[in-house]
Each structure stands twice: as C-alpha cells, then as structure tokens.
Figure 1: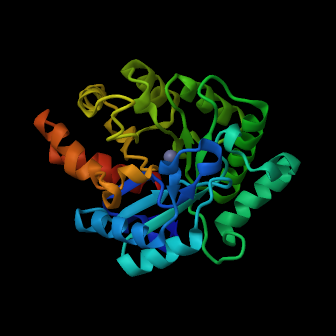
Figure 2: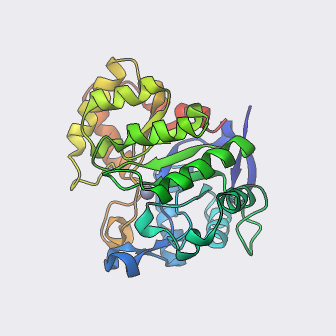
Figure 3: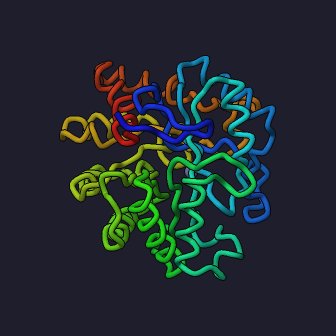
Length: 302
Ligand SMILES: [Zn+2]
C-alpha cells in the first residue's frame, strides 16, 4: 500500500477515507483580483470550516494553493492536528497572471529544485511538506511560454518524487493541450489530473482526456456560475455509463469567502450535502459513489 505525504507526515493511502481532492483552505489573491472574496486567510475561520467538513463526513482535503497565491502551510499543519482531518498540500505555480515576480528570474533547474525541496524537505521556513503538485495553471485560451516552462519543471519533479500532479483547465478544451504538454515533458499520465473539466460541459471532451490516459476532475461542484449541478450530475451518469468511473474525481474548489459556511455559503461539504443526493436521485449506486469519493483518490495517491 502506498504512503501519502500529508502536512503532518506520511500516512497509508488506505487511511484517506472520503477525499476532496481540489480545494483551497488558505489563499489571498486580493491584489491581483481586487475581489474581497478571494481572501481566505483567517486561521480561526479555516479551523471552523474544516470542523464542519469533518462533521459531515470528510476525512481528507487537498489544498492546491501554490506559490504566488499566499498559502499557509504551517497553519494547515496546526489545523490538521486540531481538527483531526488529513490535509495534503500542493506546490507549483498557477497561470501566468498569478506567477510570483521572482519566478521569471529562476532557471528551469531552480524551479525543479524548489518543487522537489517543498515535497521532500518542506516549504521554506517550515518542516511541512507538500504532498502533490498543483494546481498548475495555464490560461484558458492557450499555454504561454512561461506556463510551459513550469509544466516541464513539474514533470521533472514528478519523475523525481513520484507524486500526483493536478491542473487548472477552465472553460475550454485547454485540458487536452495541457495533457499533451505534460506527456511531451515526460510526465506520468497515470498520476496526472486535469482539473475543472466540468466548466467545459462536453462529455466527449472528458472521454477524450480519459482515453489519453489522464484523470479528470469534476471539481467545481456548487459553482453555479459555471454550470448547474444538475448538468454535472447528468454528465457523471453518462461518464459512468461509458465506463470511465475509475478516472473521475469530485470536489468543489472552494476559493471564495462567500462559499464558506462562516460567510453564508455551503462550505467544503457541499459535495456531500448537495451533490451526492443528485447522483443518488439519478440511480448512481453507493458503490459508484464510494468509487468516486474514496477508492479513486486512494488509488491515485497510492
Ligand atoms: Zn483551485
């Protein structure tokens, strides 16, 4: 059985339980977005929100907050210990608009070394280690040279450490270009997740990705400005019918204050409280639901 690096150390992947594989516990991108919803920085609020998630059946959450988005690995470790929930922290870089200014001055080798150091020695100034690479961003209309350089570095770090890589592929079929770029860079596609594919409601595109050899994440659940959850549920029924259940992940990519229960939203547990009932209404079995929410992430991280 494989071991997974959480913010509190390694655990067997069989202990992950119910997993939300793409979320944000901490980030602060107010300066770039001028949107006050884009500040998740209050440690007390985060502790409460993860307690709500645990009370509703969540066991593990993956915080895909990368360099430049102002995460807080030390607080993740403290909250994980307090609340008794597993947290896997991501490292990497988001799309170019959000690259930290210092990235341009780094060589590709230095980027690889930074990622490997985060994964094997810990984030700078802490002994908290990243357990995956993501979310790795590209623009939704194309992959810039700076983004492609990051993809090459991530593929190299993945080869060295053997971890999961997850991407940000909003609104278009950019996920195919991302999968191809990772393949060209020598990444292990069996540990590559193309994220946010549910913001491009096209099951044929999702099937094409699975056939290419990667995982797909319906990880924008509850974000109704992108599409309705009813449409997401219908598409999942279709993907299961086409035989792709075992390459599919579910999450909510909570990243806005208004999505948290503390500010009136539904919180991280929206997948459990609001979305799984839509799958059950459509006849999806408990075995299939366990596959999507427990067995698949456990296999991905093993
Ligand atoms: Zn995200």
